[in-house]
Length: 201
Ligand SMILES: *[C@@H]1O[C@H](CO)[C@@H](O)[C@H](O)[C@H]1NC(C)=O
Ligand SMILES: *[C@@H]1O[C@H](CO)[C@@H](O)[C@H](O)[C@H]1NC(C)=O
Image (cartoon, rainbow, N blue to C red; front, side, top):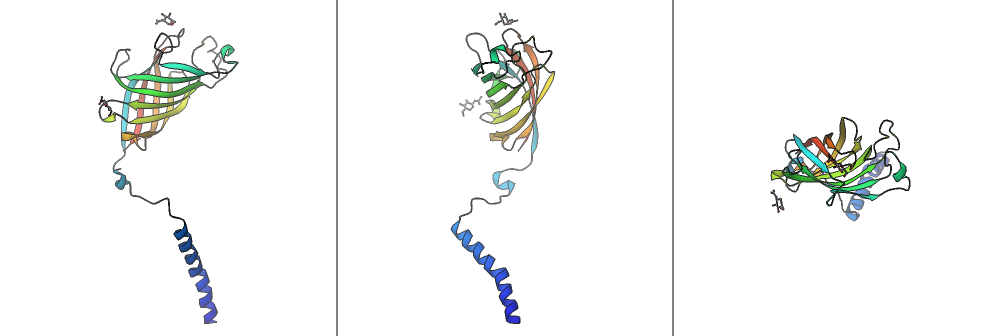
């Protein structure tokens, strides 16, 4: 009886242990727990970044170009299907010659087929933006934040997500609010004011 019991205990505790040891020996681990301090992460802080985004489609030196479209894009009132690649300067002030502090690099695309009331307008519309804000100024030089979201260009203030970052913005999360400062509805050129609120370490 006692023998049987100790055998059972043996199977319950020792055999799984043996297997897990064997499995561990065969498969080297690829994960480990770390204390945030070991990556130099101490206190999470909140930063507010304020800048102007210059999206220039016209002229000799456009900062955003259309890289793809669908057959129906040309006749769509919202240019549905147009995909733009941007390398847009970010400046301290709204003037085109204001000091450049970074670039917004990435893709935005028209992702809405109809928005009544905007039918007269043939520039960018409800779109999806996937942009990296790459900063070049001071302690932010070389750091990026990544934005992903829906940009209803003709709404007052649009909010998009900050989904990550690099450099000083590692582990970033937050949101960006965009407000059109100036728009030429003929050319589509725009200057957009951005307020970005980002939590990072
Ligand atoms: C930013 O970093 C680059 C590369 O390290 C350097 O060439 C450049 O001078 C820096 N710019 C500023 C404004 O610090
Ligand atoms: C708007 O864009 C059109 C077409 O590029 C241009 O002819 C016009 O001068 C621009 N208007 C302003 C106010 O910049």
